[in-house]
Length: 286
Image: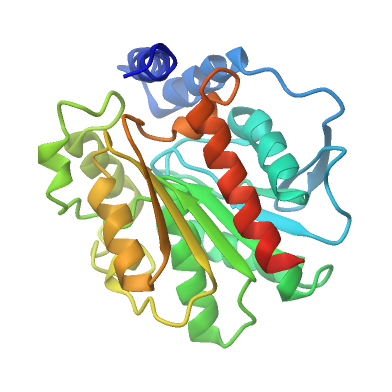
């Protein structure tokens, strides 16, 4: 493992330490403090959006947009935790990023996040044709992005031109073999912590509901889909299963931990992941 990759692993271990103990509110605040190590790139423009926040950089085209759905196990994440990452996505995809600040559990359990994502996406169709819209996300947000596609298909609404997800959480029952096989390798996640978060989010709903665990849905007929995952993740099987069922392009990154694309300031593999995401979106939305 390279020194840069080890630094990424250590940064995630520090995040886990900061979030341990305390209330959900304490964990959310610790996440926001942790991301302060990633400064916002110069010339980034941030503006309010009724569903969250617009993030643009000098590379952002005016007629292309990425709806971004953040991770955080459906219980954490905010514009403050993702603003710098959104700037990098905006540059890579040469698009505006519409960051969806969806409601979190336990205050707002399933299906609130899906409903919010659907309404945010539909609002973008008032400003952009569907062939200029992409959906992206990481971790829980990756799963939410695929759930959104299922919802749009069921309602007969126009699908986005492309989808790109990193480290997606696709199965809230946490049934993949990698949950155990990679438990000692993942510096951030554990099956127990994910099951606890899933319980808060589901609030009694079955984890087999396809809008909660989209791996159990019909993943045929989706837009071009890029899936990226690291070899050290307990969510490895979620990503592999998604790619297989959706006939998607899969990129597996050796030694990478969960959501390694956060670390583009020092990690070449993170820059590669963002570039792959941007290239995938550009190819479909030109």
